[in-house]
Image (cartoon, rainbow, N blue to C red; front, side, top):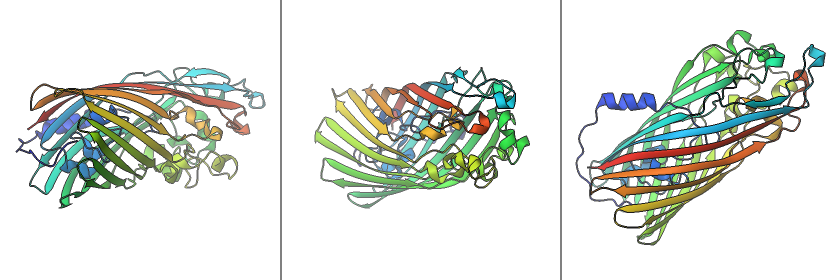
Length: 430
């Protein structure tokens, strides 16, 4: 684990380079719901652990207190994210509407490959004070059905949605005692969203002209993340972190999202520990909660439409019906030699999508639960290093149960997702 010493002055970072990386970082991806399984290539190689184990300049994305532990360094990374998403509809009958059926198998893989950059920088200002900047992305409510699953209801063209979220998080950490650090980060969020091919839902919308095919809309918001890390002896470190909800709104889609287009980024929090059973081994464990159910457009169920008569876009209108997601992450690293560190990890998340909510989640099948990861760092010299990882989110299907409302012909929608990620980063210690 990194120590609170051996820091040096670092040069200024070009504003232009930050802005360029920031724009690139807004590529959509999903693992735990639509949050990434981790931030920073080293963390991603250990199933995303990082609350008590800061390893690189991206640490503020997980716990800003970690800014005090990483020294003066710069990290730039790139990941390839390759999801596979699909749906199977069965038992649907639209004869009462003068049509046939939605039944069939549909692939949402009109776009398969996503490149996800990341950027992190930390600097030690004094023995007690550090600051940093992390640039990273969330997203992943991304689907593109070239064969529109809603065509029998009148859906036109390709169907799908795309959500992208970019975060710029400047952070500061203060050592309040020799073994206790507090940190705070400002989360500056930029969101983009678009939807297409979902015209049939206009009959259930409070604003039918602001439902589908409205192009890309954007939203900005501000929140905060606070964190703490405590050291107990030379071998054990404990951490905790909390991030506020960030308000967002897509006016072009106020006929789709509940509360007239509201789309907030959910509150999330967690605790973690890191333990060194031997000098060259580290084991880390994180527990994270993502409060999706508190975001109306994400958490409110389809029954708000079918049972309560609340249309899409209304304050109490239906959303995707997601549950809160709780994630347990376990990671391990081993210093195999003075130049090579090996990593591995496994995580398990509770299911975001209930069985009776799969119909709307044809558009956003964030259903994977289990990740297996591996990674490494190769030190070139005392300053430079390369790190890499691979992560597999195993295929998961949620089989619909009373999932398609009778007004849309009944039957069931089964949704499926699996994901592969491969990433590399370059780190420079000043």
